[in-house]
Length: 458
Image (cartoon, rainbow, N blue to C red; front, side):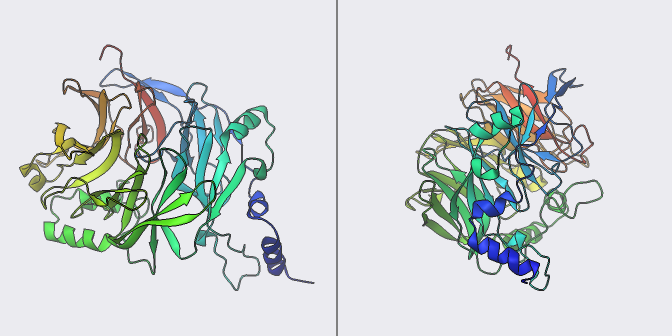
């Protein structure tokens, strides 16, 4: 009789990838009751709607990516509440209903991509993190790394009705990814949703600093955040640290969402980071040189066919550029941060650059006392789809909105901790609300999703 490990390998080789994943689909479509409630911000006196308040860590996508489903009713997030590692969930903004939409080990929740046109989610799954110890007879054999399409239009009503089927009823394998490439910078859907652009690396991974979710300091902040905000660190020491963290090679690959064909867009000598697309313009990609901090040239843009690769906003050595996001069809919003003394010798703040003309302007900055004579300021930013507003968080976890019609900056909500992660604010599709992930309720021990309505009087 064959042993259990050989039997599993034989079954995996004979079956489809969907059949293999069905083993882990027991919680797919699991329905959770509403956790929705509200509180009044003690400083601004504005109501804050809490969408998740479980003890788990609930994190929204990065502000570069679509966060609401195509029908505008559900918000995607990742959470460790499933009991099988981080998984993707949806929360209904009105009812508070929560639905689990991925299951099993190796769900790639770090880069979740919602279709803007259909009720679909794209996620990467499998790969080396499933890797078995070759000498362990009870180990699960590794599954290939795959791009998976999940039909939320079918899964959501089945979950709400308590009639969830096997995973194969909702999932389609777009493609199996090359084993010699690994994720670097996430992936993003093209504006026309014919393809996805995948940030990659290859070869032996260079030594990297600990990820921001590991090796935290005593106050709960990441080691990276603590070092990046330390005014006593010498500039040359910081530059050396960033140079090591930013080593490549890197690249971008195009994945055809219908056929699964994978083609090269571009290769770079540096570490690929923050791959995003222009939601209004097909074939336009924004990416960055990832260093976990400052870089000699942060922002880049390229066409989906590999043409037109160039720096976006050519920076000087004394500028720290970060957290770029496409805010309008012809515009990228980004931060020139000013949290260290030497950075304040030059203009800092939320800035926008025109993708067609390279014209740039700063639209707002705040001076926030971080103690010991150190000023903070804005850290992450995003623009409203209607072009009226910008939103930015500060190093102390306060959220401001900026009226782009007159430059007025107004405090929206306070005390969101910026730990265990940053708030990463983003506007709702109708430009009326700001969504954040907040450590307010747990004093920075875990994150909850919250929305704040922009008052009509503003």
